[in-house]
Length: 272
Image 1 (cartoon, rainbow, N blue to C red):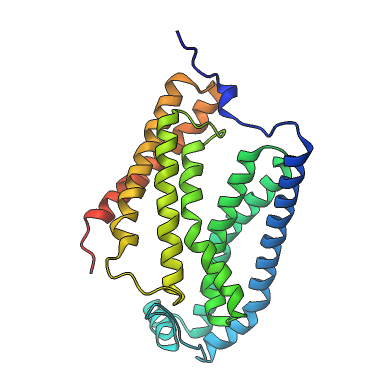
Image 2: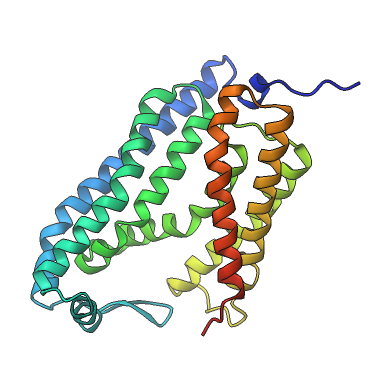
């Protein structure tokens, strides 16, 4: 009879080798530098953002023919919330801090303590990417050098496949059952290709996609991946996890089930 893997096998620490350790140390330093640099850029962009919002001197910014921000949008959003322009600018800044800070604080803590544990590094990378999504509003208005905005925008497009992979591997990096892991890896490779294609179209490098494959294929991929995550977590819960891991997974599975319901609702809702 084949012996099932123990809970210790669900975590995959790095082998005791200087070469991968040096590579990951360099990667950790690079990620930390990127986080700090992006935070500093966001911070120094705030005065320009506040000035442009309060004086209605926002340059219209659009992607693939869709207006992302403009004076008209700013004014309409402020009026919809019953706020003055100054209050609206402060509201958006506070909202960004609220959405960004938890991701980056936890990512920084994990980077500090993860050492040679690769799953900790993946967790920090996903959290850093999710936090970076929230700085776009300020950058679109303040308009730092275009390459900077492009890089932040790229992160906001490609962070989702690593996030879904992280969902599958939670809580210790175990890729069990193997068949489900292979299927998730293939699906997320396709999802990543769709995201990169969408990013390039948004920046005018590629023509817009008239078939809207980002939605037509992306949504079924997301739904299937979440279903596979739930299955894999249930499988490992019954056969692999330790008592501590079982406690970690309970709320996680509940949150994933809610995400699946939200995706189904989004899929069946009419889209104009």
